[in-house]
Length: 355
Image (cartoon, rainbow, N blue to C red; front, top):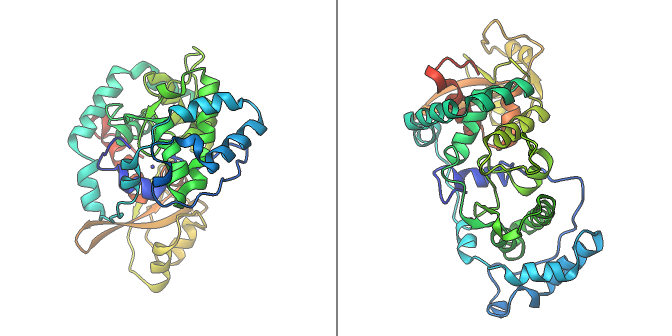
């Protein structure tokens, strides 16, 4: 769902808030939401601090009851949090829907691919070693890091304690989600044995080069070099392994493509499938029986979904997204995001990719 504000950020947050990409996955522990009713930073608490708020006190009590933290520890944390009204303003901005040809122009540039080639070349040994271990292509790992943070150059500058607390207690529409992420963040800071206020990230709480949310970090981040820390901010091995681990655990099939172009004549049934949710509920054989012309090398048994990309006003390309398309979609719930990742990946190293 960052990077303050990259062209991708707000669009992807609305789509993903998120996936992990920002990720929506949470760890197994269930955190009950604390009721909150204000729609903006509540004037009655401004200048008094978060510890005067009943909802914050309830959150502290619930966290202490689950163990791992003392009340004094959490009171010190909340006593040092700075609420950020500008984060609420960002979240309240109306979303805009852009066609693929505009999205692509902003996110799949020549410089993005050139910078990706440089990033890969400078870290080739570790990225390729990760790729071999996990069976996830190097170019996919590089493309994810590129579209998320421009290869680590724009990871966000908000203290995560500030951003997550602001959203957990001053953004009711997503309060339950962000209270869970705040709880996950407190735990990961404890696990990493680091000061909670040293963690920096996006306005929505996403972290590091791959922009993991705290729950995704705790589930999928990897300490590649065994130094005792999962450093997705500075350690390219940890970054690459974390992205690859996420993809592998979400079903990436080694050697398989993400999508194939198809030809079709729109019928009401096909239009309904284009408008359907992003799910693998049909097979390639199903689409062939509906008249979709699919490249012959794709087996009928393959699971697939039908989608379209508007390449110019009123002009569309049609595609079948396969298992690996859906895997990347779980990272960020946007078909255009997945399409951009695929195109960046296929453009690296002279455009020889086959995803």
